[in-house]
Image 1: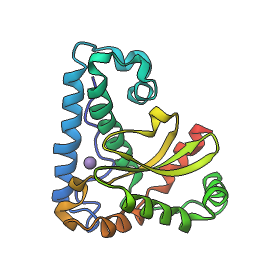
Image 2: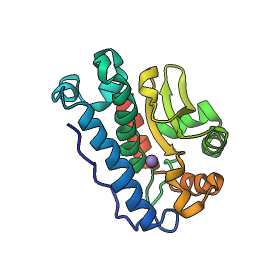
Image 3: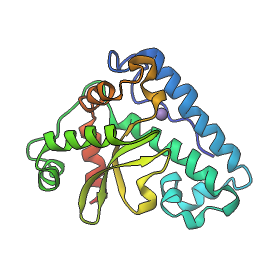
Length: 204
Ligand code: MN
């Protein structure tokens, strides 16, 4: 059983980047839809998520997912996981990583700098065809930016996600129509780098 995680800010706090109406719709309809569908699919297995140590652990170990609900868990569970991380990936009060931070040194090593990482997020998000997410992940060889289709998460590749940005049209259509570039540019300026750093340090 999963519950709809509360937003870490109020519905209007991301304005004008994301309007109050779009935020409510996204959280209360789309995110909640995945929560409800996941709970319905997992009704015959009520203790599965807690037994493996959480939704992230379940998505990272697909062998524990019963075959008859595998597709639903990947789609709906992935939707829940990604939306929870998405809300933590953005902030009304965006913070840049500290000059001396562990995260920033790793970013410099793997991308050249924060500017290049932001450019990779934008370009990868724009190049992605159709619905999906763009992710910043930790891999055995360092940080990488990658996009995945629909509700697939990097967890099933053994990668640890630090942030994700929603590329589904429902994320921006109300405010930006089909202009994914303007939406992504605005979002990238509002990344919650403090949370990204917290996740990175916890992973190390
Ligand atoms: Mn979404």
